[in-house]
Length: 194
Figure 1: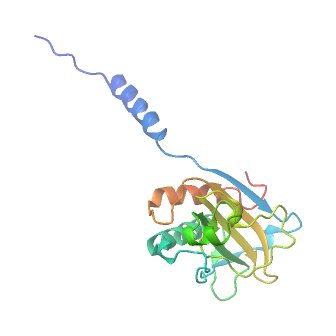
Figure 2 (figure 1 turned 180 degrees about the vertical axis):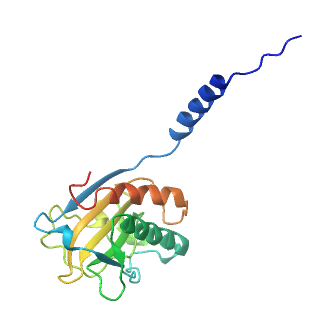
Figure 3 (figure 1 turned 90 degrees about the vertical axis):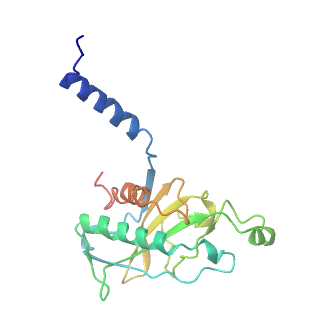
C-alpha cells in the first residue's frame, strides 16, 4: 500500500491559509489624529511621560489596573523612541499623557445623566486645549476609546492627539492589543508621515 507524502507546496499552501485565517482574528484599530497646524513638529526631540493624577470624584478607583498603565506607558515610550524622540524626564520638549474612556460609574450617571457616553479614567492633566482644533473632552467618546496627548512642555498647550476607537478595557492587560492600538495612533506622528 502506498502512502501519499505531502509535497512542500501543500505545506506552504496550508501555512498561508492558516496565517491569513489567524490574522483575521486579530482586531484592527482605526486611529485618528488631530493636531495644531501652526506647530513645527520638527523642533521636538525629547519627551517625558506625565504621571497621572488621582481620578476625579466620578471615577471608580477600582478601574485602575497598574499593569495596564505600565504596558501603555512602555508601549508609548517604545513607539516614540522608534520615531527618533529620546526620553528626558528633566527637560523634555513634549509631555505625553494618555487617557481611556471607560463606563461611567452608576452613582456618577445618576448625578449627571447628560454626562455623555463615558467619563475619563482620571488621567486628565492640567494643560491648555483652548486653541486645539476639534477638541472634544474624553466624556464625549464611546467607552473603549484610547487617547494619547502630546503637550508642548514650554507652552503647556496640547499640540497633537491620537485617538483609537476600540475595545480597550482598563482591566484587561493584553499587551499585544495595547501595543497595536498605540502603534496605530503613533504611526501618524509627526503629522504628514503617513
